[in-house]
Every structure is written in C-alpha cells, then in structure tokens.
Length: 262
Image (cartoon, rainbow, N blue to C red; front, side):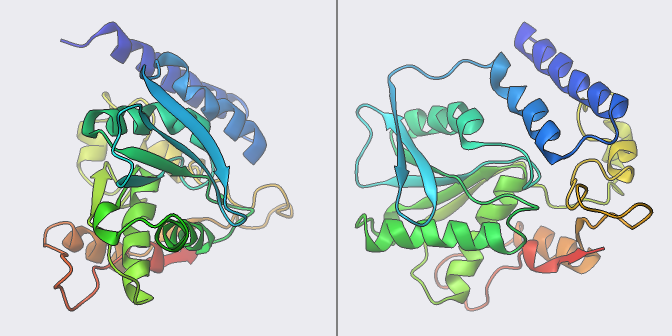
C-alpha cells in the first residue's frame, strides 16, 4: 500500500509538469527554481554533519554520520538531466545512504548544462576523484561512485573516464535508476504512464527535459539538445549486464560518449 509520502511526491511532480506546460517558454533558471522544490517533501537524516569544501577546482559538499569511517568515501553526482538539480537538494538522499553504510559522502557540484557543455560534467567528476586520491589521501579501493538518474549515468561515465586516463580504479559504482535512454521508445513508457508522475513520451517529445541552449536560440531555430545515440544506449545497457572489475581488459561502454547535439 502506498504511503502518504508517495502521494505527496506524486503531487509535487505532477505540479511541476503542470507548471512546465503552463509556461512552455520558461528558461533554464526558472526550471531550476521549480525543480529545486523536489526535496521539500523529504526530511534529512539526523546525526549527520555537512561541510562545504572547495579544492580550488570543483566545489562539493561533504557529509556523513558522526561515526562514519574516515578512510572511505562515496563521491556522488546528483541527478537533474545535467541541467537542473543541486547538491543542496540531493544531500538528504546521499547522506541517508552514507549513514546506512557508515561512510562519508562527497556530493560534487559539477558544472551543469548549458553553461558547462559535455563532457564538462565528466571532467569535473574526474577532477574530484583526482583530488580525493592526490590531495585527501584516499585509496582507490576505498572509493565508490554513486549517483541518481542522470547523475548515475554521470557516475558510470566517470568510472570509465578514469580507466581511459589510466588512473587506478575505484572499488565500485553504485547505480540508482540510471537515465540510460532518452527516446522513450520502450514499451514500459506506455504501460507505466499512469504510474510515472514525471517522465512521459509527450514531455520528452516536447524537448522539455533537456532545455539546453533555449535562452539564446534564434526564433525558428532548432533547439540543441543532448541525445544519446541508439548505439550508445545499446552499449550502455550491455555494460550493466556484465562484470567490469579491475581485471577487465576492455573498458565498459558509456552513455556520454554517444551523446550528440541535434
């Protein structure tokens, strides 16, 4: 049976969609303000400390339970289609996880689109990983990436980018509902339409989930958006079904490398 929290979240999401439909010309800043309210219906975990850090390269928010093991850390990349979302709103989610596993988190304030074009977010996450290794003294085996939605795709891609650069591999990448496809062609998009309060084929078709480049687009010009190619989607899906341990010779496919501007 669904709890009252579930109904509150559904009401919030459907309200966001209604406002997006009512104001179709809303820009990136307006959408960010709108989606920043997604955390309003949740409570933060108790017994957790937060500390904002800036290594001179990529700002972040560190957090964790008071008894968290100091030698292990979870670098986190928040969701939000790489456009909306913020570390302040996702701190509740990631710190709940950190409290459960008694680890510390580092929620990276990576640059978002359109101000930081791809592969900018990936580069920011790799910089944060380097900072943990080279400045903070963490061992690769004591680091595990995690993220939600588009942030999960970013976490997986960062994992692979580190491998491509010849850096030591972290212990794991913990996936939470990766945004692994943007064409909404799957059958579940129809069968779950009455359950999903946020993502729909109509919304994606209107191009409202990735509002990149809308502000300065000339009248009548096509709206540039980040769309994964079919090949990238297929390769990403295959990567999720096979092990990608340190002994793997071939890097796991990533979704970001298959993004195209269209």
